[in-house]
Picture (cartoon, rainbow, N blue to C red):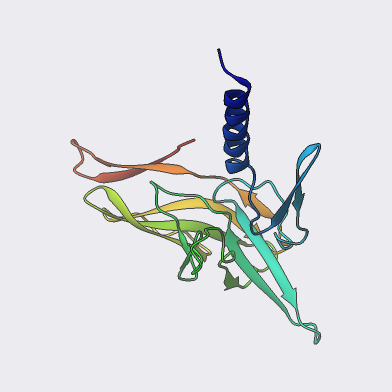
Length: 196
């Protein structure tokens, strides 16, 4: 049986433990503790003009128009992985650790693209480099045609962009990868499957 002093000590320990697990202030939100509990306030505008929810490796198309009326189009991907590797867009990884070490997106890396002519499409694919059956690098590429695969390089067509800026997405991530050797035809084949 606990004495009143022991109950008081136990109550303080429990209260201190609850305070340790309360939500702490962070980037993009503010927490406020009150008599009714903790309130979480999400700061507006933190995500830019990108609507949610997105699927991993979903194609993101954005445009910027200057005051002079010149429009530049950009391509990016929503973060996702191929065999645990984040793809690069314009030389930058989709997920990067900020220099302050707190994690999160620095920004969506994006590459400038030229929209295709009416009636044509701009393919969007991932070029996956493999060594000894393991993916070592994944890079987002675009073009009129997807290159042929080789033993050390595979191409995963994510989808395509039309002249009217509509997107047709055919594959999403995360993707698992397997390199298979054909015993009968002495060829290598690349296999990508959805990896939830």
